[in-house]
Image (cartoon, rainbow, N blue to C red; front, side, top):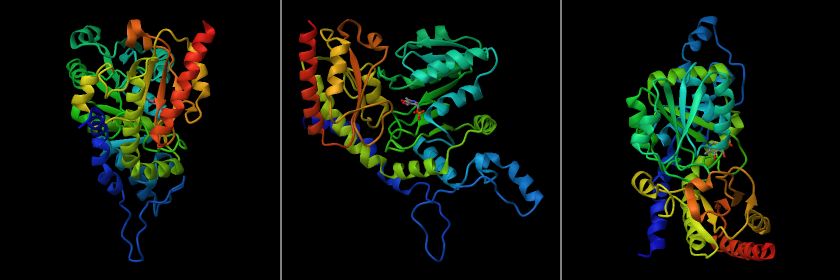
Length: 410
Ligand SMILES: Cc1ncc(COP(=O)(O)O)c(C=O)c1O
């Protein structure tokens, strides 16, 4: 078997295996003699009517069971999606929230308290960092940033008596360091803190709670919704007490998602395995092609040895997604790379990822940490469902612009 075939199998195995689960989970529509719909339709509603006041009051105490109480606490389509996400993450409970960012910030509000301390990896999603540096700071919570590949001794030295939450994101945003989640979980627990993981890249291919995670966060906007047409997030937990704290915080913050976004996400989930089985393989084709190019210093794809933390990816993940980084040689300027990006015809230029279409985005900050001396400008690629040969042809023409622009600027 060639290296390419071995890699294809390694990145797509988990996606193939989960196809059956994705098709059959959370389809608990009540049987009806007249026939049963395949899909739960979107359930729109604010007010819920009860036969008596006693019935209404009883429902108020059942908020932890996702009962129908009031639209802001979720309707059946949201609860179906919550059951689906809990199954995929291996959690006992999941709460849908309004966006991926809300999924990152809500548990921080729920589990950090006055004068608390939070440890966050330097590779964290930018808006989570901004939230820590503004809102959390205003509420008296201090944040320390740790290098994502820190060892146990280093992390132990950063723990404080008031450390309440350790955040992880694996692989890291833009720089793709794969973190040792088991080690971080053990250390957090040793010090009485919870580990919260942004598991957006690892949805379906990394089982957070098997590795000691306490709170797992998903930007469902990405692969689960899968079509770049909805903004939605989820937070999952296994501990019953944590569930009560999280659910109460979500209710108090008014955290809810619209029924149409829940419906789009459930619909997207059904085909996530099939989409990613193809997208993960195409991403490897593009990554291997780029790695062999003289203009490229390094490809930051967790399935390739050039990515920091690659060995941990091999140990812990059952597949890979289709999002990775490319670092160019220092001979090329940022302007030359931007000219290359502008010239691409099949890659959209835009934030977010996880849809059916390919995207490219210049990398902001952090890349020096990953690449040291061989570091030039960098960008992030998301590989969609296009024919990978067409994408490679587009990138090949783009590299001519990069080198042409480079010699022009000399
Ligand atoms: C790793 C990660 N977490 C969270 C988010 C936030 O998701 P949303 O765009 O739904 O707010 C993103 C969005 O790009 C992300 O990449």
